[in-house]
Image (cartoon, rainbow, N blue to C red; front, side, top):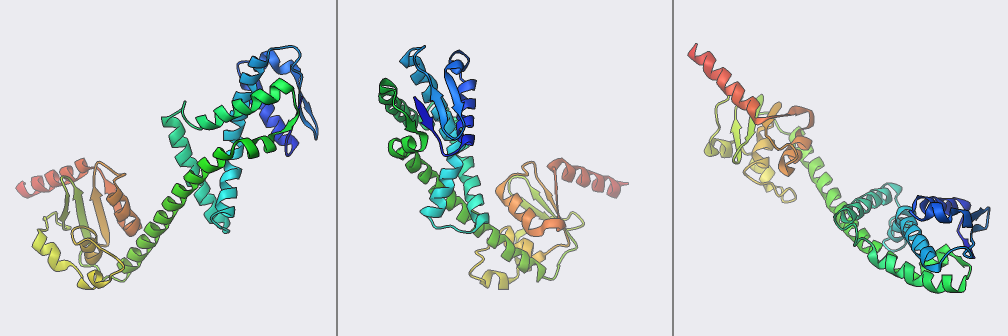
Length: 286
């Protein structure tokens, strides 16, 4: 029985999956690679059930590891009409991350429909020992694979668009920051039970004081949707140096502020703020 592929590289990759299978060592002597022809499988020396298990698992692994990315790109270009290489690669990367996360959560369930369909398709083929093309096999028997990947592409495109909107938002706020006159040389932002503002002398700014410093022109820009609690005051004050104290560097708002202020911002642990307050208090007492 002969299995043909688009090219020799694909045939050799499938052979690698066969070799890595627990049954691979036992059956490897009955599988030959034929240049420009694919693989030849001699089923005369072993049971059909074992061949079915071996080829089903190898096909399934090959499908997920070698065919996922090309099919994702095919969907992105053919169905959603993306043409820019950078955009295509970004969406593929997001879709791949979503797929890997789902496979990690549901290892036994990931693409289980495809595995079942591969087994059903191979049963009749192996029973008749009929030669076939791997691509024809996947095209006609594994339409669910493309449908499943299409769902991941839709999710990835949504995430990509959100990320693009976010990056545009950050870029707009950076431009606003560059156009603002600095009201304080240094500002300390403490993330502890909410966000608290301190000036360069470590004096806490109360809410009326913060509100009085907000540039109302920023709030008038309808495209910004700035909150009046954190971002609007920060952009209005436009400190030359912003020290952010937090024990959660990955918090979304912390990351946003850091990206807006870039080299102006320094992220420090909360303990650093406490130490500086204690040191200031000691100096005053002595």
